[in-house]
Length: 361
Length: 96
Image 1 (tube, rainbow over the protein chains, first blue to last red):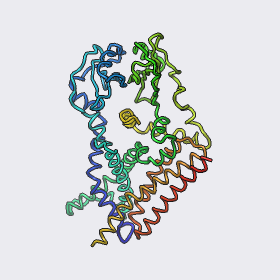
Image 2: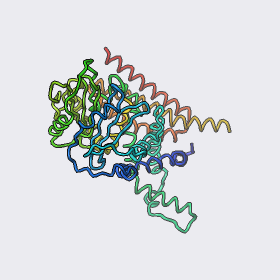
Image 3: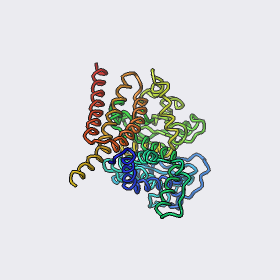
Image 4: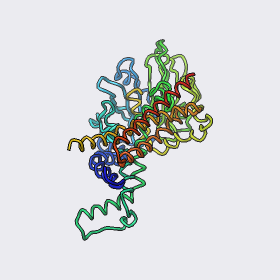
């Protein structure tokens, strides 16, 4: 939109910055807040300011409460405490959406309803959806802002004729606009790598949303195939036979903890209540990998894992080892998703998982 | 004034929509091609989608700087069409 490339990119830099700048500020601000989301939660939810020393929770004591809360036949889950989230919760899908009831990890007494979304449920989703969930409009807006940020970074460098000299320039004696522009140059150059890294990692995390064409081309079954292949989301259809009472959750948790070398499970999910294939599933977030243990629950037998909990083998899911080593690019590329997952903070991966959990892929 | 306005809207649409369509088609084409050579779905998609953001970035900057709007739209349409064609061809080869 100019006579030269530099003028055109100047036009792009100015107008993109003006239009997208406010949105980018909101995204970066809430993202910064979310570094301390659990702490803000504790501050805004006084009833959850508890001390959790790491002792195993007697979850079986919550079974009746969970069965009472959740709609009949609907899946529910029990979240286990951690030092930053020192309470137990029962989660279930109600008519109004996902509901959570909080409990003391030691006495299992119900805690007062927090009556706030606080940081983990307000600021964190706002950071990448703006809470506009219809047709994923919020996600797309934030993704557009992220791409605009990348374009701003690159065009900003190109339009500067003397970027090295400008970096050392601060003309306080001139008009205020000149001073602001000089500050803009210094801040831009100092933070350049970080701005690029933040915007690029941000859009990459939701690559499967922004490039549905690639998902459709890569995975059989499109989005569902992507979720099945990429995440350890163990599911199992109901067997159709009533299972009666069920084996002990505490025993399952103990088995899992032993199999993971003392690593505590974070969540226990009951997918098909009252069925022999009623699967209780524990998963761990926030370590090097997400691992799941699948149990068949049956009143006649002691809780026993269906498959080796330390490995990845389960007949119900595709062989994940096969995803790692396929010629010719396989060995080189196989590490890529894992590396990326490691680069992105745990909270970002859990954002994707939360979306999958709440929307059912 | 109206022609200037139309040109501006056309340019913005080309940057936002046209460049996205081209890069999405190229991501699908790259993914489908890699799948044909035996790369796993996850690897193929990860590599191509990450590259796709860079492709979009490059196309968007070029679209802002390109002299003639008609030429720009023609190139973006060509890129989109060839991406779609590669996906269709890969589907035919893979299905056979």
